[in-house]
Image (tube, rainbow, N blue to C red):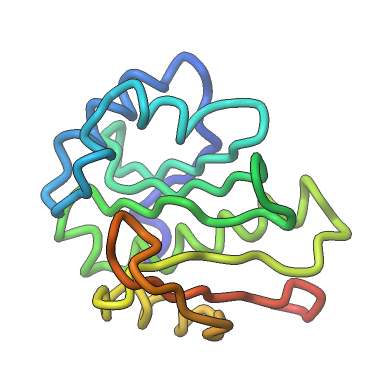
Length: 158
């Protein structure tokens, strides 16, 4: 399954191409994620790590963690660009690749978190399948929608 996809850390030279892909995603995005400047700050910077999934040279998904305002890192954005790659499991693979990269960069990090919109059952299922557990809830705290806080212990072997 993984052989179809290649994964890499987002490099500065690829930021614009990544933004183009994210803004053209077939999935519905919150309004603030349609703002190119906001999105650029979200996916690239000193305290941000974005992993890009590609098929050949085409970006099919991204996952971003940041540690600007939180520690340990928090997954702030997972975007599956096209439905075909989503069906083939690129989201699960992106979570794995991000966790590997976080553990490599910060070997002592005890856990990673993700904040998800409560009604996004697909996202909650995806993270649950990767060992994330529900840690709490936030009323209207994610772009005016109810949120779920999820956490994955990184001190265990994957």
